[in-house]
Length: 165
Image 1: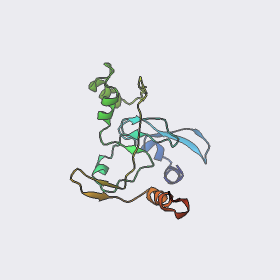
Image 2: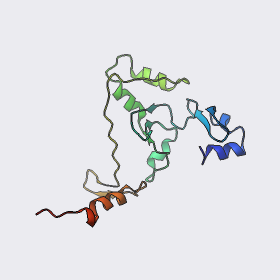
Image 3: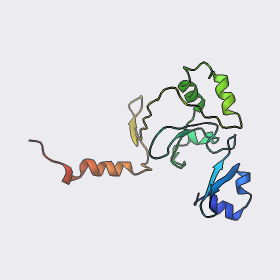
Image 4: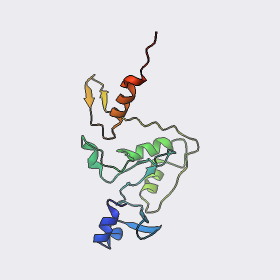
């Protein structure tokens, strides 16, 4: 809000309308703004909410070209999906009312629709900066969140290591 939207709004009073956004509350210095659903929404056509203390969720994106880039840490903390329709179909596979056609129709509507799953599904998010591919080739990526340094500190801090005799 402070880094992008408020500066853009100060320069261009029509910014919200042009971006499909609307003010829904707050004050002049701390407004509450949402982007309306639809094709121009930065979250794409669907988002998948799950309980967590960081307000992270999975979402579609209208910017599909980003998936081809090696460096993809451009989001604001949520997780963009390359195939959100497949995830929706998988999660709703036990409900006969949610056919692939019904899912697409809901996603391409200009109205929000909340769908609650009949049973909870576990969500585990892995963050890897090194891994082996199917051919055994080792890959490395930048640690954009700094987790490797913190983990190395915990694992290799001499003060926390006690000998086992």
